[in-house]
Amino acid sequence: MFRSLAGVNYRIWFAGALISNVGTWMQRTAQDWYVLTELTDNDAAAVGFTMALQFGPALVIGPFAGVIADRMPGRRLLAITQVAQALLALALGLIIVLGIAELWMVYLLALGLGIATAVDAPARQTFVGELVGTSDLPNAVALNSASFNTARLIGPAVAGLLTVAVGAGWVILINVVTYGAMMVALGLLRGNELHPMSKAGRGRGQLRAGIQYVARRTDLLVVFTMVFLVGTFGFNFSIFTATMASVEFGRGAGEFGLLSSILAVGSVAGALLSARRERPRLRVIVLAAFGFSASMVVAALMPTFELFAIALIPVGFTALTMITAANAYVQTTTRASIRGRVMALYLTIFMGGTPVGAPVLGIVANELGARWAIGVGAVAALLAAIVAVLWMRSTRDLRIRRHPADDPWWRLRVRYDGDDFSRRMRNRETATQEIAIIEAGVRKS
Image (cartoon, rainbow, N blue to C red):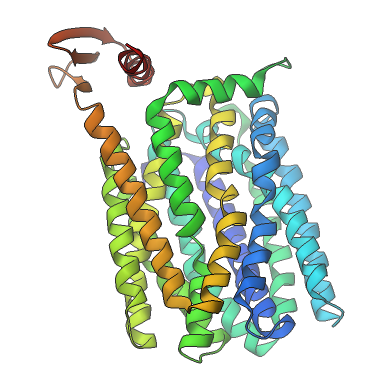
């Protein structure tokens, strides 16, 4: 489960990222609560619009950020994005502490943070491969999710208590300090123990090449569709928990932070279970999507605050199982030289749907209630799972497997219209790409 931590570089990265992520979750919690209760009168749509501005830039610049990630050294690019995010957090914390914050100011800073995050995300995802190499990449991706959600377990609870004690502004200023942990970690990494990936040189059509690569891989298109549906309508947990805490149950900032932390309990468990798997499988993504839909329905029906909090544990578990498996599947079946662009497209689909989904769910919560907003997320996850099942049925005769079990070669076998086609390949990535090409040809014929 923790094999990636055997490497010194990954241990340094993991520690720095954990501290930084705790601060990030503290800021998110304090910011959302401040918008909901101080700058507006429990307006869930305003929270949704803030989230839309924070994630919206991924729709526009996310794919171009992938080109940058494939060109620039990851260490240098991450240092730049960390400084930018720290400066934006400093500005937000100061205007709140000084009592001059207005809603438009928060919107503007959320947009700036969204731009910095859009550039940071593909670089952060692909840099993991440089820390551990290809063999341990699925494990490292899962442990990154565990780190992120351990921070979600700690950050919101601390933010809720500190928001009551000292105010949202000071909570956000604490986050500025935590960015220093990531900067220190980047400085301490041992360059001679990194696994540098081949970087693309400057050239025309690099973004188009990434899009064409994904378009040829129908398995990736299915994963991207699932991630879009769930990310757009199911992963707006700030709206769900904030409105359920304040409107449905009449609770305060402390209870709101507690809900986010309880949600993270399931998320950490899901991420750690994913870390035990040697490689990600598409069926795990599908089963987790079904489970996420069912658990969201159960949570929406809970009559009390305590039961709702307990119901969030399986929500977090299934959500992180799905998204961690999807992330690892995309990374491990994509060649390294184009991985930054593919991951940027993946993150654009995942985060870029928030500007659409967050305001819609905010309006649903305002007009129909928070429970109906959670129900929308459940329906979206169910549709995502159905899309994948239909695709899997249409390609059920396409298989990649080892035969016999101890054979170092991968055998790709296709049965179409009564005929068998078989080929041996040295690695699973090549076999996965080949199966996509064959499947596309079968559909065309």
